Image (tube, rainbow, N blue to C red; front, side):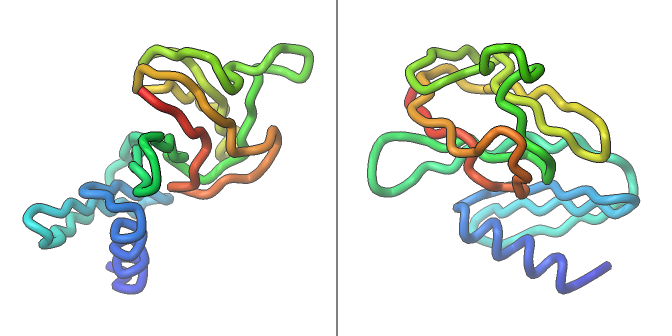
Length: 139
């Protein structure tokens, strides 16, 4: 196991106030969970589905929907279509809010929350990182 990777993932958890994080790349999979402020590390070689994290900021009541993976952000299904969501739109937990392309696979990303989009934080065609804020919203 790559100790440097585990340390970086733990720092990402601390930064975002996350209690659980799943990372998968190639045959490497790391699952981190924090219970009672003590990190627990699991490493397996099976594929994993990574759920988006929701991080609550300290300054107001809005929330952030973060990227569940590294990839290219697309706000619309194709260049001629309207965006999946825009500021002011209400979404349900099963609504598609964007597409993330990773390794030539187009992944529909569902809101997994009910609320109102306040701001789209990623630009169409932009490369986004795991854990990067994509949408600001309120419930």
